[in-house]
Image 1 (spheres, rainbow, N blue to C red):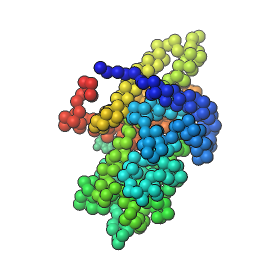
Image 2 (image 1 turned 60 degrees about the horizontal axis):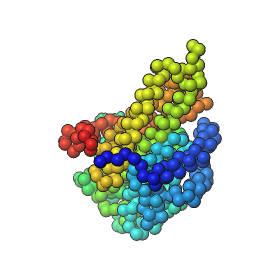
Image 3 (image 1 turned 30 degrees about the vertical axis):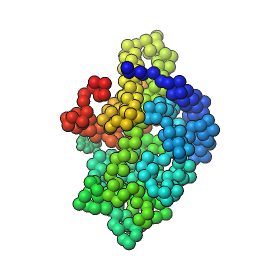
Image 4 (image 1 turned 60 degrees about the vertical axis):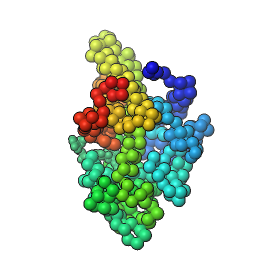
Length: 392
Ligand SMILES: Cc1cc2nc3c(=O)[nH]c(=O)nc-3n(C[C@H](O)[C@H](O)[C@H](O)COP(=O)(O)OP(=O)(O)OC[C@H]3O[C@@H](n4cnc5c(N)ncnc54)[C@H](O)[C@@H]3O)c2cc1C
């Protein structure tokens, strides 16, 4: 039997996050907007930490971090439900106690130096695979690492690296065997900032916390003990990092869409034209109806992908489907809500245009729409997935 209901515990956790967002984050929205418009961070590091500590007191720390590392070790479905709630505000908050999934492949010494401080929040990581000539075509890496005694010497350039501006260390992917390439010739290195790599911010249309950096490696020396995992296994690690929770991106967007449509309905009920609220016009009602239907469909796609993760199934197809649908629908929905607000939607008085710019990124990073379509079509054509998904 298929059971779509949440357990009491799941509902309690979701409701706690919903209240936290409403109580602690939503009131910060006007100030976050003001700061972002002045070119500043939405939340300072101290404010972020203070909020994280508040949540920690209630047990919210390391949502997906295994319990042995002090985290909550929650399921993928639960994490998706939490992400939807966080998406309901544009205040750039995330719960503390998080570390990149691939850092768990670290050996004991690396765990002490990188994993544990990242979970604790005292060190900040960034993930660098993209290069000027290798984005969607990630196998086309040009950055090299050459062995010299018990050190590796890294040369090359990375681009669009989130968090690259202020990260303490980078998980950088470099070619260590050109012949083997992505099949055994790419290695991941943990490179501290003081090893000498440089970062340069890249201006973007999105908000401050999205701002990525270009990283330059010029004869950056990294000791052998800083190889993450095994030499030659880097490409697999990179794919694992990207696949860590593709469903979480559309989950976040889903929360934003819910909030946006609520805002749109509120506005439509009060804004009058030709003697009637615009909510009474079919053109506006269809925007609301189409958005609501798409939000519901997206919820099922996201939860189904997360459920597959929890079942230990190969969820890559379901995650691509959810990411693709989420990215395209969220962009359509924010566009409709902006339209419903008329000229006001285009101003900086309301946060709609802020969401509009932010959601646009979803169609590009962690696999563009076109690359998701390519994956979905290939899976179907090769028989790795069937039309209709697991219930089809
Ligand atoms: C704000 C931001 C943050 C990012 N953060 C990170 C990060 O932290 N770490 C990191 O490593 N990278 C990061 N990226 C990089 C991101 O993953 C890449 O930008 C993305 O994968 C697309 O690569 P590209 O920009 O080189 O575009 P390209 O690959 O050059 O693509 C250009 C266009 O061609 C299309 N296209 C490409 N190949 C095909 C094909 N075979 N068939 C059909 N269409 C195709 C694409 O879909 C796109 O529309 C970030 C990017 C941005 C914008």
